[in-house]
Image 1 (cartoon, rainbow, N blue to C red):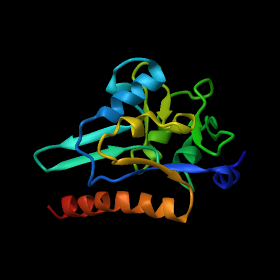
Image 2 (tube, one colour; image 1 turned 90 degrees about the vertical axis):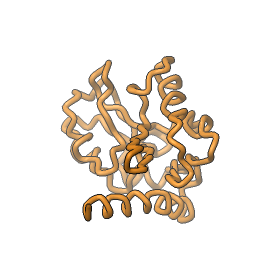
Image 3 (cartoon, helix red, strand yellow; image 1 turned 120 degrees about the vertical axis):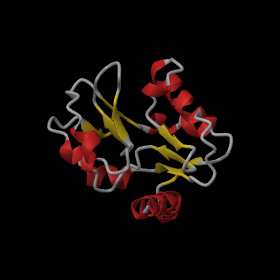
Length: 169
């Protein structure tokens, strides 16, 4: 299945409202438990970047891009859409080169410290653990529609503004 076909099938995406995020990192713990049965944030597929001195709390998760640079950068074709259209990493094909990590401008993919393979959000097969663990409603699992895409855009706008402010400093 091509990415374009995957997008046509995609029914849901995650949106993150950085204004609601407190940096509690419950989402990281829930993700690591869901995928690896361990409380280990370094193995989470969502990462919360915090810089308390600058007042930055920023959850980073795969945005399921319409034109995924991570997939284009993968030399083995290990990043593919599943039957729901969600991009995921096929670990048996991934060689852990990190090209996808470098290509993703949103920080939504990482190399797992144990397997040394790429790991990215797979939306927990339609039941995202990170969203269920977020007591503040910062993470939502919404229908893939114009409204859902607008919610995603609103959620990442503060990130773009933060980057602009940091560049000016």
